[in-house]
Amino acid sequence: MKIELSPEVEQIIKDRVATGHYQNASEFIREAILKAVERDQLKLHQLNEEIAIGIEEAETGQFSKRSVQDIIRDKETKQT
Image 1 (tube, rainbow, N blue to C red):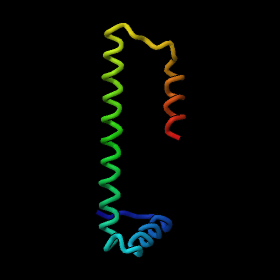
Image 2: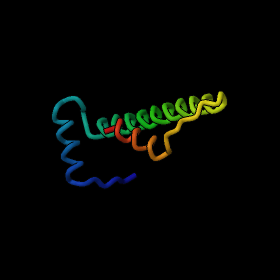
Image 3: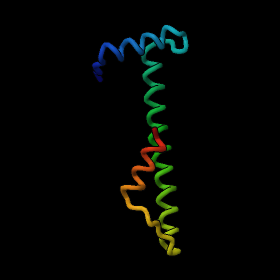
């Protein structure tokens, strides 16, 4: 597999390896990929939890008066 990196990304990798926390670029990239996968799995888990809560609330007749746009806006505000 061949991967092309921008000069900026290459410099970030070199800087991280130079700190001594990583023995080489491959080690840094491997860890970065694993962290990205972990982050994605966490987001999916949180989304599934929120969906389960919403289903439970709907089944018990608990409905929000907020619009979908309101909910999205609130979520985006909390992430920043």
